[in-house]
Image 1: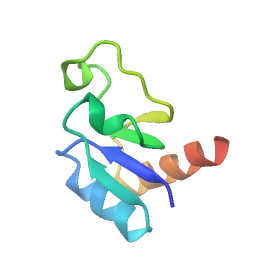
Image 2: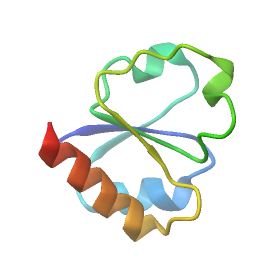
Image 3: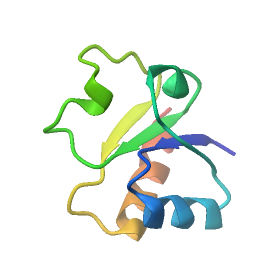
Image 4: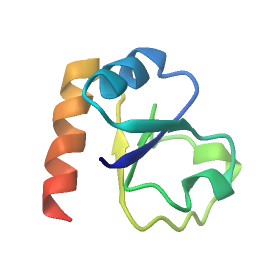
Length: 82
């Protein structure tokens, strides 16, 4: 199953993804996102983790304004494309 990185504030999304069988890791710094298939953030309008040039192989999903179920659907859609 895919490994999903997630911001610490998104606990409801983390629980929903874990219930669907995903391995979820809390992202605290740039090294945490190096081996994830997808990363869920709470808003792309702010500088994610204070880093301006993040390099990630997978997709980044902005969960702002989305329910936990909507985020799960978006994760599943992004992973199908890879």
